[in-house]
Length: 431
Ligand SMILES: Cc1ncc(COP(=O)(O)O)c(C=O)c1O
Ligand SMILES: N[C@@H](CCCC[NH3+])C(=O)O
Image (cartoon, rainbow, N blue to C red; front, top):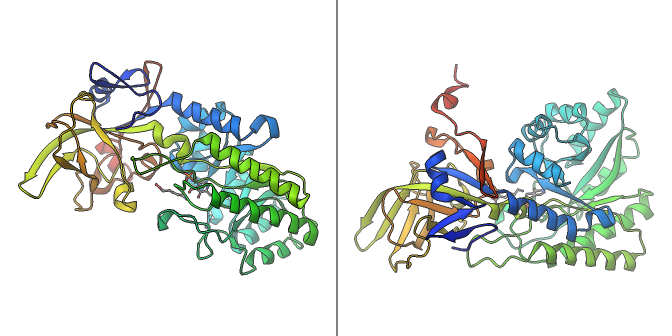
């Protein structure tokens, strides 16, 4: 198992943020999400530095869908990031955390009327308009309020990135954005001639998630900057901001070969410089929206092992007290993970392969297939790493399993950020 961020081993035991992982399991019980605060803050700092936030006035907006307790809103605000929200719920979370509304980008391919009104009333900085329906409604409400709302258009750039088909979004057959190749984007731009209460200040595209190659981003720069030039020349629209979305891939298992934040940012910025020169246009403000690459490796999940079922000559199932309810990614995307026993970190790995299974009533509730873990015993504490993105945020109450608590660790201290759901909480909405 790869050690991320502040993880270290002392006396055969895993420490995160200077805190003994076994002690965390005892104190908060399992299953439990543990977040390495220093690693998240360092990732924010790296993005700010290499994406030239101060130097060039560029922006990094954290994609809240990856993981958004109020604590995260405060953390990214302290680190100077913007925030991408994608629903009324995420917007409300940010609002309750006193996150500056002007630093919010409001995304979503089907914002409801109530969500659009809420965004306007709370004063979000930018609506990333996805479709004609949203554009028309936004104009109508802004007119009624006698205000002008800044917007970006979400462009479907026709770029097919290599990633799982469920998390690929840049290709023409996508539910997101205005397609360029069939002309929808230009129909939307034409419509702006009549619309006086929305102002197009930027364009946005997001080509997918968990992408390792830089080339699709360079292709995206090409498409987006050509568009900036065309909008100026053909429509006299000055595009001040260009948002390339998120999607930068991270390490889950040895098969993943992620680039560093530095390399990604530098390559994108270099390509932007080159393209601006080539097209002879002014450099707009550049925006990135990382989610996974800010938090995935900073989060881990602690589980207690229960039943160990050895089906002779077939397979050994090692079952844990969580599963697809706290990490849907293996069942949804066949995503791989690494694991270890937190107080047997230096032991020899066994040759015997085991399958780590969840406790849900689904055969597909398998967290890791065929992994080698050492002398595993019931009641050991197992850790799966890199569960910080799209774990808690995609958690469910299937089988009426309560959601795990979230603990942040930093410099030897631990802090409870989200409580464990209780059985009473599970019933709290039932009449
Ligand atoms: C519009 C938009 N921005 C940013 C992101 C964040 O992506 P990631 O977590 O892969 O960085 C997503 C999710 O894929 C997205 O849909
Ligand atoms: N939930 C996805 C990524 C979501 C992408 C959002 N546009 C994952 O876990 O990989």
